[in-house]
Length: 455
Ligand SMILES: *Cc1c(COP(=O)(O)O)cnc(C)c1O
Image (tube, rainbow, N blue to C red; front, side, top):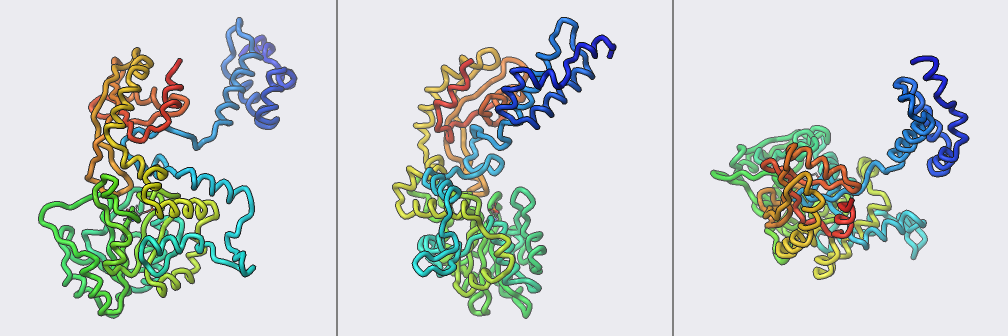
């Protein structure tokens, strides 16, 4: 850099005294503004501007852009139009307004989180949700922790530490993101005893595996895959009598789990928690933010004596829920008391049960504006698509849906997908056959979607 060019750069003090910098300080604070201006000046020093340019204006503009990026929340809203309703990377279940209000109230003011108002004594934080869970599951008792992975870890650590847990080879699943049953077993301090083969496990396999060191028998929902063909597995209802005769608990990890039969909502049958309890499982674990449609949580329901042991495990304290999630969970569980309300109010059920005709009508309404907005980059047409429930529930069942297909005029589907993600509220679709597909099943805020397409 020449001495001349350097001389043209404004001093940091001169920049700070400008009205533009004052405005930046007012919205972003002095330390961040100072930092952004220093970085901008360093940039100009490294790459001097053209003689015609005003270096002060360049530095202030660069700092303003930098500060605007910093001010934007890192976790922000997106449109999830991938066709997967419960998408782990996009936050899984959306919460109903009832839960959102309950969370806000729990954050804003003190509450009786662990306090019995009637007696003035210390209370139990789980008490706010236990009666709902026992009511809907038919179980004697319930407890709740951070997520279902934690629920499985806690159950195994409490009941099978230093002992053996028997699981079918056909159920040694890996759930996305490093949750593998054998690894969780090891971390819990339990020894895994694998029985049967990948495709076939029989009741006699369970009977023969039981020995002096056996602590429990376990069934795991094979959430994200299905084995077809020459297969055999043993239902909980058939294992339960064997477990009972030997005085061993039968534990079932239901994965997604659902509190209600989804058939009346036009969905395929998924085993309910109550069915598992009725079949004789002594403990059942399931997620809060999969089909249940609530906050991230891991529910454990079952025999009162086993739940009491789990609650005494110091790990329970490390894995407990905070007041916000308990407030959200309580509000969501209350909705389950009224199936009609549930369909209208719970976003997960509302999205899963949304009729194809309604989604199609939405696609037809959106098409002209979307096609016009993308005319320079793609041909947009109506598309038939198939949504997935996601998060391991019914992995091979599709829900007929409708959407928009963007066929790129040039540059490929990746560029087009990026263009959609670069909108103020990123639109996340899916790429198939060199086109971008937006499945409209989960689009409810039509106005916000359209508003950001206008130039
Ligand atoms: C999803 C799943 C888990 C993990 O549940 P999280 O709530 O995500 O921790 C565990 N087991 C099975 C069978 C699952 O499907």
